[in-house]
Length: 124
Image (cartoon, rainbow, N blue to C red):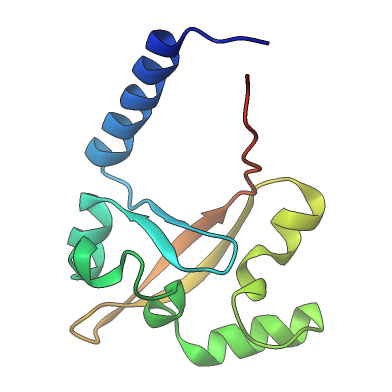
């Protein structure tokens, strides 16, 4: 299937605008958990600048370690990035769970985190 490059780039730009302007924090990672996208709402919510996290860290810096360990035990796996993505990867569906986030200033708040699996394919 062929897509018109102009149409595709317009769609990509529209998605970028939505991510940058939504009031919801959007954090995207690669398959290893390294942060790739950190939108302005995530900055406001967590206190980190995008430059401090993109390509530098994983979401572990914003999570309570004990919660990660507890979830790992529930899943029967080692604590780490798979705690967040195991079910979405296996079931190919969105998983929403309550987590405690840690801001840059070390204050905390409870939030709902939705994780979805996304496969990247090249369409020619």
